Image: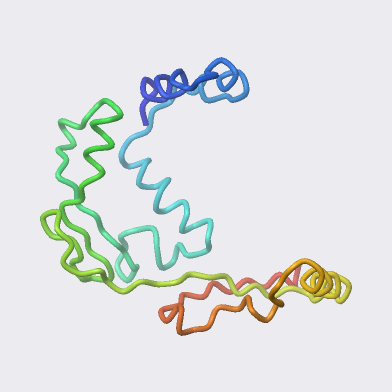
Amino acid sequence: MSKKVRDERLNSFKKADKVIGATNLANIDREITLYELAAMTRAGPAKCLGLSKDYGGLKAGMNADIAIYNINPDNFPSDGPAIEKAFANVAYLFKNGKICVQEGKIVDTGTKQTFWVDAKVKENKQVMHDVREKFLRYYSVNENNYPVPESYAPHQHIIPVDATQA
């Protein structure tokens, strides 16, 4: 969020000149607002994952986990460590409509979810043959050991992707 903190961090590296020369980070002078930060860390990832109708916003009907911080926006911290400290301690946290953190203390762990992509792809017999051969040659377990039983992920949110049309 802060150009000053970015520059301080870049210059703190042992080989700062090499890092700065290899990246464009030192040339970025733009600083972002809290609103932009929320969009980048909440709405953006939800949209990228195809979950924006259910996650990443506060519209009615959306599944929103809400964190409330004890930060005065009119007196927002301006240096990196103060910003980090302000966001390190949530005052209240709501998950699925239940309060999980109250006045900084955990009162409920909420219901955890496992998100996974169910990708439909055209089967390629040669690829499947090669994968099986590599398992047999290089692994002490076979490919049937890799599926995760539902008991390990009881609250699943499946993201269907059909790549057979591509």
